[in-house]
Amino acid sequence: MDRLAYPLELLYANIFILLITLVMSGVWRVVYASQPDKIISGFSLAGMIWYVFMTELILTSNPSIIGEIGEEIKSGNVAYALTKPYSFVSYYFSSILGKTFINFITKLFVGVLVLICFIKFPSLNLFIVFAVIIAIILALVLNFLVSATCSLLAFWVEDVDSMRFIYQKILFIGGGLLFPLDIYPVFLQKILHYLPFEGILYGPARTFVNFDLVYWQSLVLRQTIWIFIFIVLIKIVYAQGIKKVNINGG
Image (cartoon, rainbow, N blue to C red; front, side):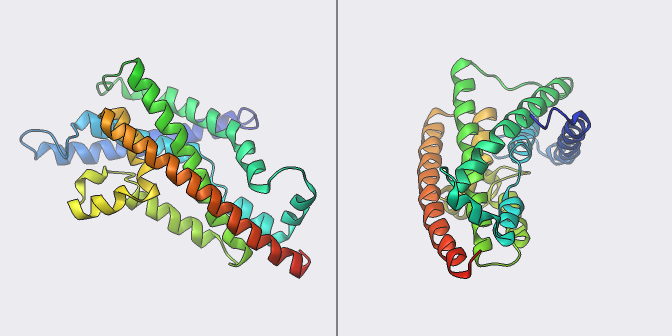
């Protein structure tokens, strides 16, 4: 609940995501002005603006834990986790649940309240809302697991900040942060389709803007598969890293 203790921080975060969305909406308005049919890769102008808002919402709602976990490992505090009855990574996952929920709800409420004054809200029904919620929850979990995997490399790498930088840039490009993956060449779309990053940003945002049942089913399946893959990977990496801590005495 510490996010509620700092209303100014919440306000700044909401202003930031709105600024990014409004700036990108200006860019897309110029791009769409040159399009005779006003459709780009299946997205209308309003759809593209909502797409950017949704990807920004997902990305900024999930607190980055790469630096935090990395610092715990470098300082040797991770050794204390060995005496606890719970998993080190599971502890961090549970600790950010509340932060993520508050971040997401406040930004969603403020963002929608402002954007509907300028652009048409996507057509939704109860099933689509349900589908979007499922896709977003899985996306947030997957983003955490990928971030946790990167942070555990601190057992071997001195500075994990570079990992955070690289991961963010991969999400920008491979996750479709500022524009949908449909804009890429077909061969590149096929490659990105089987990587986890599509399921973090592009998939949920597309489901919100242009719902397609077949795509949603495929998305949820791939998100679930990647979640299990990273859970196993985290267990392996953490087990190997802890051996290093035991050998070096913390």
